[in-house]
Length: 637
Image (cartoon, rainbow, N blue to C red):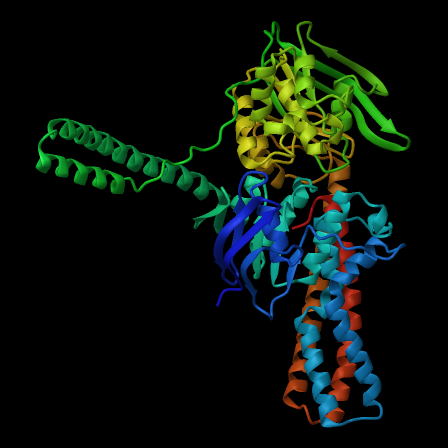
């Protein structure tokens, strides 16, 4: 039986149709990606499935015993509600069971009826099944994976940014452990490590997952079916993103071949019909045959002309000729904000033709470094030099315009010195079509401003291109076009991106910024990940990494290894104790289920489980501290 069944669903916004008589089923445990261009109706469909938006006609059936969680729903909380309290609400269903158990325990003091004892045994087993005894551990794991620090958990939820609230809401949804999850652009506000945590969670999740995402790596690693929304209809692909891309091209080529064959036959038949009509003048029999063939011609065209994959304007970045070898030199560059060190004294050289991906966690200082390189910020110390023929092009993460009152087309004409026709063509390639080109810049969203800035940047003659999250607000097809333009660009490239597909495709050198220091690795992102997985996690100053070389440590490294060995032994002992307590709780719970009428035994076992549960929580707390210290040492196994 499907968990979600959608039949003949139709949705309009005013007179504009968004979803046109679509139907599909989602089976239990399926992981499905919904793909399509921006504005194709993906988010609209998700809001309808979650009950947040009404539809015009059709039927949606969701199994009554299944709960749906959706990441884009940002509920409001009373003033003063902390992040920690919001996270705890993810355990509301477990806390409700615990509260009911507490009330039953009070009642059992004067009512030892079989009904009360039986209900207590049932709720105790349910509390354990729902994960009541490991709530704190799950909370710590999820918060660690999504980088929700203890300091953030103490902050007021209402004072967080929209991206931070989305991240908190996602964590709460994971803790709630709903049977069906709708993920609408779940990776937008996460850095790479948090995305990888979410990937692992979704991959291992036993429930049903529906996802809308522009992160192709994320889709490739998590889904088993793709549903494409195109022209208000659905196309189905039984595989991940890689399969979808290959199969979509195969289907297009196959349909185009059938269409062209039918067209050739039709052209031949039409020519024959016309000749027969000419010959048949005065010959009724021949004329009847001509009309019969004409009717056959009307029936034979059964294949529609396939719609070619959408492509942007065939243009790339204009490039300025570069002479020399040295593009950029950083000598002991440093930067701090108050007591916070953003960049320790760092020395790096960039040579002609290099393509560098600057990666790191959110807040590590990537944008700050780019602003230093572009001259927007002055470093606290050190020197920065560029080659004499360097001309830089820069796309910031937050785009501002000097004349926000101008329209898009006027901005293109005045600032890029192009004709109105060229301006409209280039704007159309970036999704600004029709009346959109006459909008004032001040009414554009942040994503639309980034698209406009990128469109303008492509007309400049540059040989050092610096991009800060260039694909953040683009759909997959737009990203693919940007990638084609970057592929043709032969100058130097330095970029910040959370799009791992983009990073791996264009980064041939990795700058990993962490705790104010840069690890400089020559290779692709995938090679760097493999290298990093084999190395201790301690932070090192900027230096060139050779994958085949091993670093040697001194007394400090030896001390760390000795401490790590002791901590691993402690962790092993704690894990054995936890396993023993879990086994004992399970044994007691089983006895309670087998003896629902033995009220004395039920009371004893319940009290023993409560005491063991407190011991278990303390053991988990100790184990969590050991894990944290091992993680700091970079020696967790």
